[in-house]
Length: 472
Image 1 (cartoon, rainbow, N blue to C red):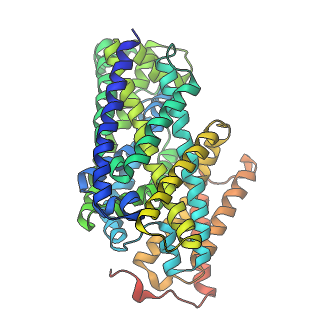
Image 2: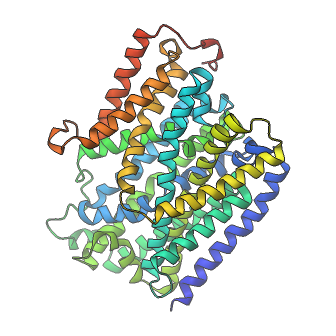
Image 3: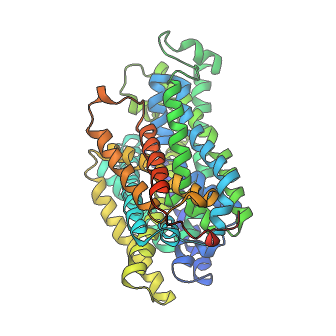
């Protein structure tokens, strides 16, 4: 019966490319160069930006990863997405309007404007490490989804290749407009997929109360805090930090058509992100009852394979949509960093709009090949992902200080804060676990970032020029 889920997935992919081809017109008739291709001409309405944010946030970790964790810790695994939603909510309420007002293309560009060229260089290196690694993980997740749910059709490698063709194709053809519009479809498909999976599975078990009764006594079940308050707080701090300082996330605000649209995009996106984790957690809990003793990573795929081929196809498309939506936004974010902060800044500053867009597309293609090759060496990537996410503390601190307390900012603040935070991460990883006095590296990097920033404020007397900071 493989032809049924394959048909569903093919219809989904065709719909994505139809929308992408149509979005190509919007890119062509809008602003040229980087702004037109990688920022949608700064014309995204709030609804499209919100879908882009939700698609970026809801990936393999938010669905398959949460279900895997729920197999052990129950409903509390859903806090992962709640943390993402909280970060987006704060961004929408506090910083989105100010970010949009800066009229910049990348976060490192902001650092050069107010601090130094060295700060921009250090910033772009850190951002690229983070985003390239996360992008590579999306190939891996896509291959895992297709091969586990249709093992007779896809191998892990062929699943990775098909995933790459789809999201790279969308990105190359339509740019940021295509990523935004296809993510509207992706968000619908994601909710249809995981929602249908949860409803059918819980119904099969006799309802939510019956599920709770059938879960083993030693399993946390619906205990909201079983995963542990320290880890939940760590998730919230990491996501609050990540949302304010990762290029792929803040680029959504840069591309919104005005300040109000930018703010609304994060607020709407927050509401879209919040439920997904808890829905996926229910599926993971159901797997404990239906498939005891399996490898936890198989929790969601095993449950899906129990359903009808049509339902399995819709759920498969939903899971894969989560992966494709995340990958497209990340790839465009990385391409923006390379094109704007490296190529245009240091090698070809006077490109025409046409050549500028060609460089952007070439950058996307090269990054696609590089990230795919990196994905083939998946060992150690998850460790690097943790490093990257924790590194965002320095970026977030610098941005918030620049926006809200520029009097404390010095010309060397960005360079020193970024460098010492990177060094702190290396130290943390080299330390034996018994020496780590904090429950999560995010606490350590925040401590180092804050201490460094305020020490620089004491010793460096060269203040940034406040008159250039956007009106508060």
